[in-house]
Image (cartoon, rainbow over all chains, first blue to last red; front, side, top):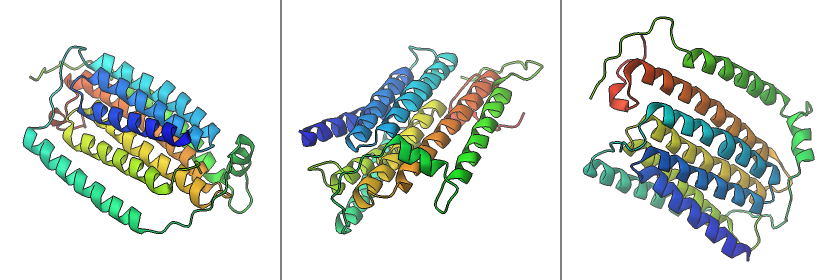
Length: 174
Length: 105
């Protein structure tokens, strides 16, 4: 049962990821990315890490995808097809990526992993205790650094996205 | 760990996802599409962190915590990139990589 579910989620992830990077319409490729992210959240549920699955669904599927859809709507005409690289460059890149996949898979399948066969559910209480712990191995300093980073990004996003005072004349390029 | 699923199958899926992201990053000529490819790459790495934690060291939580940090940094990066793209579109009315010649105005 879990085998079938895992393979189903993997096939969904791979097919929609390929569609997301090869679709000519930009809005469609954002929606394909949404499907990929939801299927990855399903994989987190299968790995007994429910908190990260919830975070994935809210931050990625709820936040980032909506942000991307907004930016696509702001900068793009919906029926415009975007240009992609030429056929030879596509084929060259695909060959390069395939060789990379082969090298990675050979390295992975030759490495003997010492797998510990215990089932462990990661609870929110454990994650929270470690995230805010200041004993050895606690993560309080990176946590604070990340919160300062998020504040800086918030201010920076507002400053950058706000227009300059004087509107410059646009030079449309075609 | 997931019953009946070995670590090798999980790593195969994440490797394929990573290289699909790399392929998209190289072949696309549009800033937003490149952002989508970066999201794919980051998600592959987060999956690797979580599954290595669950398969090899199930009593530790380091991989689980790191995956949360990666998601936070990815969200910050996306927000800033979208702000830059919108500002750039306002200046040069295009989001193609070839048209972005200088970012200093």
